[in-house]
Length: 522
Ligand SMILES: [Zn+2]
Image 1: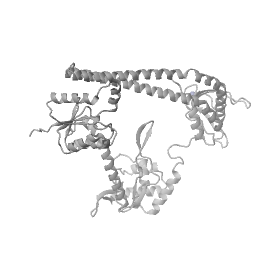
Image 2: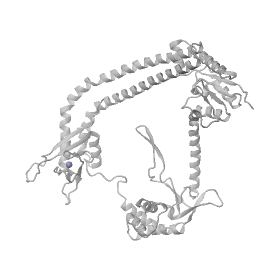
Image 3: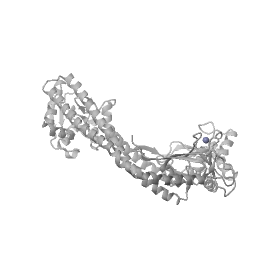
Image 4: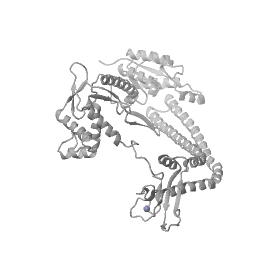
């Protein structure tokens, strides 16, 4: 049966329209009405009603015509709604977009714009999909939240909520209630016992356990060989004493440099409850293993404690390789710093002497250059920003002009100067131009912001170094010292040509070049 329902038009001024009206004194709604009516006529669409929003509300609640429209669309009064742009219905970042998308989708009402029509029943209608994306994401979030709460309840009941059973078990569906538990896999359970016993009672290291299992011809589930991380996971998993652990690694979303990323850090306090399943290991063995593991764990979890305050900073002036700290074999003798390239003949020095020299040099450098630098700051820099600001102003004026031209195109279309093809061509050219201007403005604004930040940093650089040098000697931790130096220095190169063999030869007879971090502008 053909769908003979009429279309309706929805008219609303955007904020930009109001801006343009100020310059031109035209009535946007009137013009849009003409354009859409003409469009409908050309496409044999019967128009049954025009919703004309006179108030300037951003949300649906503030827009009375929109409320009426939603109701009518829900009642499937219209085959479709004609609108200048999809965004006239609801803005992309508001909740309203979800509401609008859903109403149109479930009532199978089309959205028609002069540029494109959107069919909500066609999932391959990419742009409609984009329009609806906001909704999907929101729904996903609620569903996901519900799922998570469900899982937590299951964990509290001792059920197993993972997808893959841990080594030693199989996942089984519970008979009298929802969810899953674990059943022993006898063969694998033997392997688990072996791993625990080797570690607890035979003092065999994790690496060697992996090798031993390989040599015994015991195969892991999926891989060819045992890895120490698999062994570690087994030894850490309380599932083997009949517990269920939840959120050992909770997903966290963080941002870095404005970009979102997901991470799964180890949770220090995961939820651990008694499970419904049988244990494989007794508590005594479990406790021995946990205590032994604690002793073996390095004090700083992820990276080794920094012993060299110059780590990552000092490089060999001869070959360019990083210089290394080498501890002295005898106790109470200071460590040396040497080139990491064994073929290089750069001569080593005592680490603390090099460290002292660097700090001294920085102190001298700061006193000599501070005054010059402050003069320089006042002189050169601001002109760059003034140029940028001027350019920005010009671009913005141009943008307004281009927007005005856009409106002229509509006028020419309405009064028949342009036919439809001409109209569309001019329209897309003009829109492209406007986009170019907007892009340029954005780029320039980013540049300006960057320059302003550099200015700020540059005025701070000397106080920052001064302050750092003041506190350096008071730090007793090499890691902190290293961090502090890294914040000030890009790198230091080191060169020593003559050996200080004689007892009274000068131990500071070496050359260092310091490259301080000073924010530069382009
Ligand atoms: Zn070298």
